[in-house]
Image (tube, rainbow, N blue to C red; front, side, top):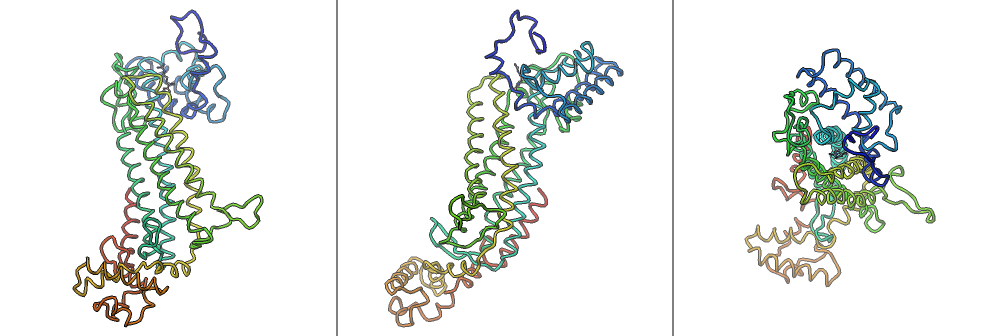
Length: 461
Ligand code: ARG
């Protein structure tokens, strides 16, 4: 079959429906440069093994460079009948180097070990891009924490006012998962750092080629140790897909806060014009579309992971064509994250916080009750009793429609003789925050240390 990588034993060509189903050039063309890099490394191994003369290798190299330039300038693109990236590039090579020389390069390799290698190369490059984008977002969160350092936020559990915290503490709580995502990308890189090239179709090659040389030329520190594993495994791809999905989930939790903070009722943050959108009918509207798209795209990123894992489940060793389905999910994740992350970073970097409104809200909802209970513990009251007493105090204040600091000395005494006027020393959000001095606590000194530690950990990833 003309232009095909196989056909010697076939008398009829593929049907149109088969071609349409089988074709992958509309997505795997993204791997063309990696395929050519693999071919150049493979030509070197063939020459080292005595299968190409130095002149032949030089001619192949030059032909591959010309093809690389044609891919870059768009003069070489897949045609409608091409099956995959490998087929297009082999046809181009037969043209550029002639059928005799061009036909020598396929010795000792298979599309199965090629594709397993190329997807790692592709992901390795994009992991770098995504990692830097994640760092930008962490930096934006850290910068906002620093710029609004003294601001106090009503910390919530169950979305209800719980205890006051520094806004900086809360922002850094969004940054830490991203730091771990960054570390996960680094871990991924260490596991993905093995070249499957040389695994052949599944059993390795009989030509005695130097697979370690190919690995080194492609920037891997080692080769895989089992050719079946090299061609069949996709856990490296799935692991990337997990980290990408996790980043999406972390972005969506951050986005949810921005959506909540920018509502009229909460009003803790205002969106910058350039990072928000309007309405086609309601002239007054300013919408947090970036945050909503982040929340929405998290579903898509998780779906990509789920689809890939489902494809892999129950697949027999070694290569099966199902494995062609590994690429679109992660290509989609890469495109999604690389578009989403800069937008979320801009959204965060340009938020304007209404710290006065936050400060006003922080002590509301009796969020200082835990401080009263802990103050009682410091006076020697067992926590169980302190909890009861403080509950009664909240109830008394609620009945009068005042905050805890709105009760006079007599009212305090009526709730419990332990509630002396000194309890008022803990009835401020600032006092509450300052008292939480445990290592991970929200006291300003601790949060300063936390910010420094986070910055250092990002630096060494
Ligand atoms: N295009 C395939 C993939 O993406 C690689 C080709 C392997 N095809 C084959 N029949 N063994 O996985």
